[in-house]
Image (tube, rainbow, N blue to C red; front, side, top):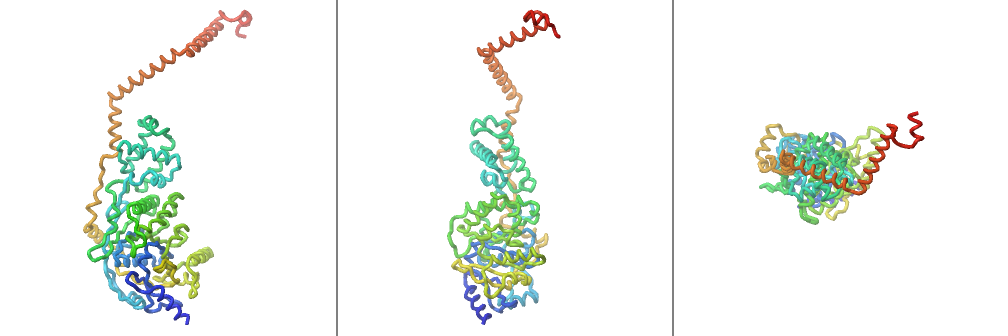
Length: 514
């Protein structure tokens, strides 16, 4: 009776439909129930999600599967490929006996296919380069990235204001460094007259933080041509959503650059996409692999900003999925916003592991059919615990699931295939060329060249000498100065006469030096 009750409950909660996507078959008492399909409502994919599990349990293939199913439903996808595993989406997969058996249990034949893919790059890898200008960040967001205090943020706001007022475009990092240097040297007097005192200490701190960001490769990210987020929303001629793969397999030692990019991307999407409310399908879904790289190195201000954007971006028709080893890698404020959770197996090798598993199991709905903490340690490769929302936004019953096999290649493209894919890109010519137009760096450099010419320096020297002379004359003509001068002169004269024995009282003269 329990088996039949389980089947009825799962069928009523995960039934098939035009606006649902199939991810696998339900598992009862360790075995898949043939044909018991688990379908997730497409409209719930803008309620965000999590894919978690130990290394080697199939997280990346689940990521690949969800990306494919969304593309099949005409939903564009952006994914961060940290390990370099997802380029195979651009090539059809290959079947084998294990895949055929898996698909038989699920009740769906295996049909290999390739998907429309664009390769993007953040650090100079093969692909379309992603860039943004410093001006597009603005002083508030840029301050949070640099982790500045209120005083330093205020100075940065002054620099942005001065740049706007004087038509000095801030495009890349050399622009902001140049204007920072100008603010504490040649332009200090002008800026202080307009905006108040400029702190040299704060300027030095900001410069050091910019250099730190620059050393992580941000000089390749800041600049033109800025990437247009509308290019993430393309659908191909067959009705498949484009899959934009950001290749960041060298980002592990550059966490600040990665968090900088992610925050700027989410902020740009939020500011540029119109309000949509609850759509039948999301406009865009973003998958972030190895999500701990964002959260582990982010400041509190940065985490608050990410959390705020995640809460609000759903109304723009955008869903965000985090892929990581353990749900505890994701801050609780963000974790509470995730509607779909796909949890692969966790390993209990130590007492600490068992406590972590117990804690993880409490993040899922209570089930009369599973002991969740025991289930999490007994799942096989390609199996997961799924907790989803139904079409009314209410939690559906917890289910263990045998997941579908991806239709595309479960391996990477070789170098020749990557080159062909990039060459055939519709966007490569739009973004491949780096534009270094006249901006704050060049304009201020020209201004300083004029400032440092011999004629200009001679004029400045004459002005300075005149000012100094005028100041001395004013001092000497002042009555108080004259009185002080007379007193000083009198005392000096007395001292000299005393030394020579020609001045002072008789008592002083008779005593001499000793």
